Image: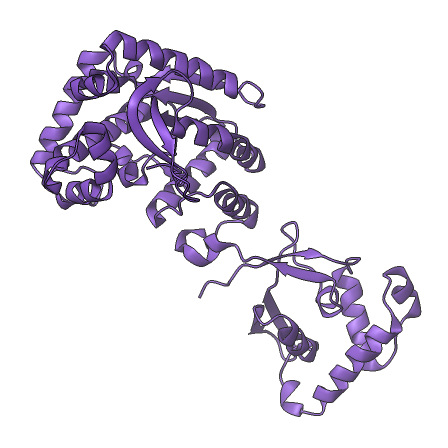
Length: 406
């Protein structure tokens, strides 16, 4: 059974394990070394209190029979920190191996005495260890920064399979030092404030701007934290940001924002330059592209979308575990946005072709990104409903930030 991983911080001078064992022995033998107390700022009052707790329990012989020599201290510790645990593996007569699940501080467990004397405070459990089976054998120096990143940027907790793909991506990066982070952003569609805390903006699609759209702004704010995560994981991938220039090929979209295709693409180009400017102070270079540049242009893109939709129509969903019902579910959850973008419909089913077409676009992005860039990983900030479709034609590890718009 996998152990629960905890973390903590020191609130007093740490006491090394060897000193801890020596002092615990001295309590049991009623011989305390005053020099050790002074060096590690341990008061006699604290040790007298610990000794009294020990003596109150040592009268119960069942606590010490066939147990490690410090077992009573483990019991005292358990009362202070109910979440900790240990396993005892018998060895030669009178010998035991004790494996603790102690909080880690800088990836190292504190000593028993540091914890008994209140010099350690537990901090939040690392959710990833509790939530995912695939994390159990992964060192805390990898899991802890990822866990912190998810909380700090308000990311979506991935599926087990996507987290495993992400961990595999990290391991391969650490081994080969080659890899790419691909980020898909949308054009700068008009929005309005909602007054809602978790979704402060709503797209109106009244016009198309040439600055940062909602997704781009979400990415810009998260990138410094993401770059710090990469540094903590000791990986240095190339970061590529692609903008959805293919949305200029939609007649309905062009009519909605009252632009020609060339005018739309001109604004998209300016949005890319705005993104570059917003990221200019990052300690890592960001490369920006138009997404259809990955496949050779408009016609190749449209041909690929048609090919993927034909596969969908045959209930062929490639590498992802979904069925045709997924499109109705996407339509249901994006009905409000679709009605503002493409016009209000009386029946939910009328939005299904839109959902299917968008899913095909994500599948195409995943395909071209994975076949263009080394060891590709996708960081997304749009709708996580489409996250699996990046892996439609080839598995692509994907991480999503929660979206702040609708």
